[in-house]
Amino acid sequence: MSNLKKKYLDFLKKQSAPGILFHDKIKQLNDFYLPVCEKLYLQHKLMNKQLLIGLSGGQGSGKSTLAQIFKLIFTTKYKLKVICFSIDDFYKTAKEREKMSKLIHPLFFTRGVPGTHDSKMLYNVIKKLKKKKFYKMKIPKFDKSKDDRTKKNYWKKNKSKPDLIIFEGWCVGAKSQQKKNLIKPINRLEKQEDKKLTWRKMVNNELKSNYKKIFKFLDCKIFLKVPSFKYVLKWRMLQEKKLSFKLKKKLMDKQQIRKFIMLYERITKQMIADCKSNDIILNINKQHQIKSIEF
Image 1 (tube, rainbow, N blue to C red):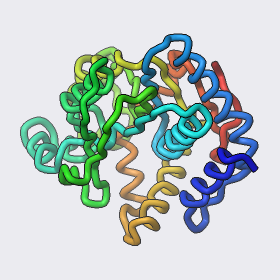
Image 2 (cartoon, one colour):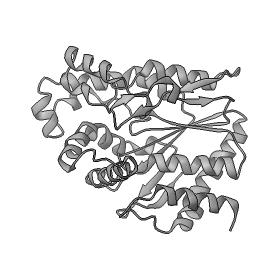
Image 3 (cartoon, rainbow, N blue to C red):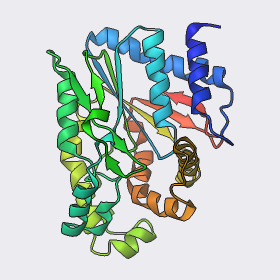
């Protein structure tokens, strides 16, 4: 067994939790992960510059795991320097979101949608990572179990300029909608808790302005396409189960998760509809496995 395959299987073993199985591990590696990484590596060599890869998909689709698998392949097979981080680590602090919830709309207290991230900090971090002259820097870390940003001594340290940057997150690369498309509520949460469209309009304006500036940095966009939005609830529950197992504490129950993903529904469905705008699409089947690639 090659060193890469051994590291890959060891990584998947550490990711497992009771009731969660990884099927056809080597087939997924050979048929999907390696071809995608080969294409990205060739793009990096052809451009002869640092590559910023945006990785997005619905909640629970497997973005974080896939980002780490890609990092493992790039560092092991291609000997590249890789930095991997999530948009989740740039959530505003609990105090900042509480202030937003009082000044703008109560729904902004719940982390997730555009507007609940520190977009200025995110923009500056990416800008520093892409500078020709690289300086040591730190990337923030968010603790979901405490719903708050960690102290700076827990942030990720980066000492050298990366060849590749993997930037993952559920709304990475998302586009704003036309104002007329915001009028009709997409679910019960929008209908009951955002009757004046204040929250929807603010989220959309953030995508149109601050987030658009950030996503312009992307050299390549990869999208994990779920079969339909109903699988987001099922897989988000699996994600919660893994996190709960890791932290050894109960987090959100099914009803809490159901309401939580309503916050993400509009943009997630829009991203599925607009998926052809991505450079690479990884189609996921109902068994939570990649079934095909679209380049």
